[in-house]
Image 1 (cartoon, one colour):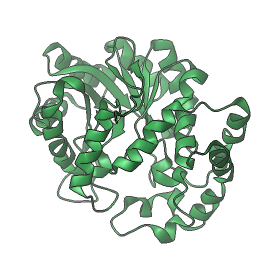
Image 2 (spheres, rainbow, N blue to C red):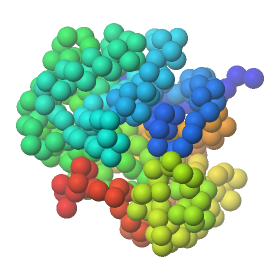
Image 3 (cartoon, one colour):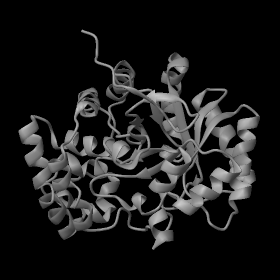
Length: 338
């Protein structure tokens, strides 16, 4: 039986044509505990069969291991996929260290490393993973633009920037996509970046559209249920009293899912998918999964359109969520707009 294909959209004005939902690959290498490599590779193939063509990674995921993991899949399907990776989060042998580098010399080294690990001659979409405000955009985006002129990168993206920063960068070189967290639990991207993106024709690749799994309804008390090695043990929304309070917020998500014959995760994804119509821009959620069954569930959400009444029940949730997105929010756009 042929898998039903999801629709295609242009990822930003002049950007690549991609499936209306992408796949975040981070968890295949790190952060969510042990991975069944065979199942993860099956998930990649299942995604492509479903019409998913945007595959998202970063040099920081597994300290390059995630890019290496994707390389055989990318080589087998290079002309059918849009390969997105990122630079800027510097990691060392110290597992606790996270630096942010936006300087030209670092960018030049980073792209060569990503090209080598991915086994490709060109990166379709190259993101600045995090912004270092100490480095002028003219230097950082200018260095990224050089990579486009040299044929090493096709399109440029930014992650977790403010509307003002997006506008400044776009004046240096066209930005195809903004990658920021966006979900029923996380809406600070709407403060300024979404409006500017709509104005400039920049698409939004919404990461963690399932709230790092919380919006699937999988947890009654996440603080007690997460396994060792899962980074969510240190995320404020998954710990202590916050975890229980946030689980209780899912009542309207569950109720709508029950009426629809859907899962809570599908309703949460449909909400993000519908931001395109609400805000007048292209939104491509990039949920992460390592299981083909979850992939099928996620892509099926692209065919759900929520009613005005359902949206009215869901929209207030972000105002009630307990805890920040990260233990340290200093590198996010929300911190710079506070």
